[in-house]
Amino acid sequence: MEKDEFFLKRIRELANLSWQRDIVTFSDFLNLNEQNIVSSLKHQFPQIVMETSGGYENAERQMVAFLPDALCYEWSYPFVCIHAVPQYPKYAEKLTHRDVLGALMHLGLDRSKIGDIVLLENDIYIFCSETISSFIMDQFTQIRHTMIRSSIIEDVSTLKVHPVFEEHDDMVAFIARAYHLSRSEAAAYLTAEKVFINGRCITNCNQSCDNGDIVSVRQKGRFVFETDQSLSKKGKLRVRFMIY
Image 1 (tube, helix red, strand yellow):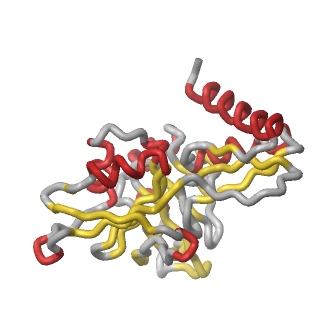
Image 2 (spheres, one colour):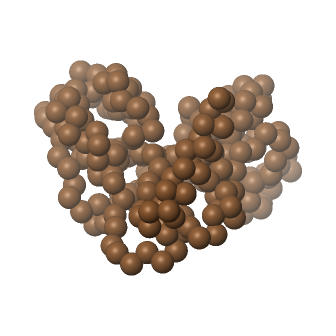
Image 3 (cartoon, one colour):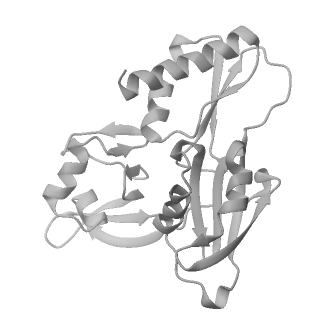
């Protein structure tokens, strides 16, 4: 069975289980493409409400909750946020998202059990399934050469986490300029179905962007496309990439 077929089967199972047993069921953390697929299935389950959350506003990786239409009890998403900081900040390395994710994957964890990873200065926030939180707390002690200590944030709703934006003033082509790629390299991401605009997979090299669109490129990150429609001296559209 192909990966997409298995994913669709799993989503239908969760929706049906929620309806038949009158309970809330949850997916793993889904990427933008998977969230888009789930959204396209909503009409197949009119008796089920689907809600999503990744723990904070504008989270990229999110869980889907399947709720019976007449649900009458309180529930919460089965994920937590782990807050990690260097044990010795003075000697800590400058860590990246890739460093943190690599250290977690080295522990043998399933990527679908891990949501967004947000770095704010020396603070690292890792959203993950409750089922693996204890393991991470015990085993996740080092990133590269930096020793870390972790704690669980008890109330995620009070957490003030947001992506860190980095401003770039540049021209189109969007992906090539945003990630310093050649045009052929940027086109390869499109043809490989690794580019998403507001969660929708894009393969058209001539696809346009609207102001405020969120563009996600697998293995590269994502950016918010901004433009005031002004032109450069050469007559090209001037844009700004808010990369995070």
